[in-house]
Image 1 (cartoon, one colour):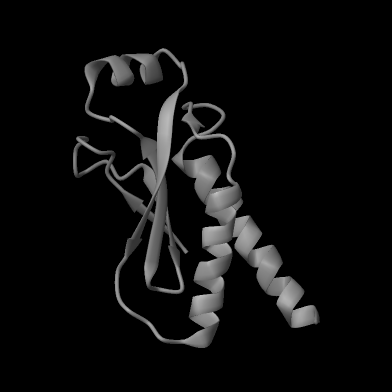
Image 2: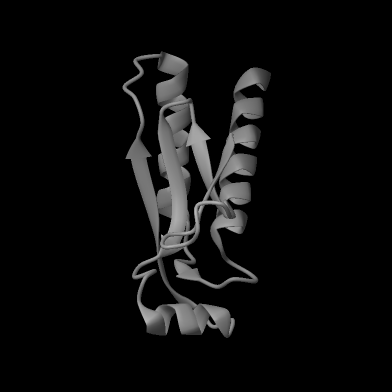
Length: 114
C-alpha cells in the first residue's frame, strides 16, 4: 500500500512524499542521497537529476510466509531498479512507488495463476 509523508526537511502539513508499505511490515522509498543539501535542492527545483537511494526499513517483524515472499519480491525489484538518479518529473518517489506496486501486483497475480 502507498503511504504519504512530508518531504525530508519539509513541512509536516504537506505530505507529498510517497512510500510503499509491503506486507504491513517493510517500507520502501526513493529519496535524494543528500536531501538537505542546498545544491541538491537547487538541482531538483531546476529539474536536474541528482543521485538517489532506495531506502528499506522494517516496521515490525512478521513471520507470515506470504509476507516473506512478498518482501523478497520487493527486494528483488529494488536490486534490479537500474535508474538511481532522482529527477522530479521522470524518476521520483511517486514513479518508484508505482513501479514497485505494479510489479508486486503482477507477481502476486502470477502466483495465483500457477
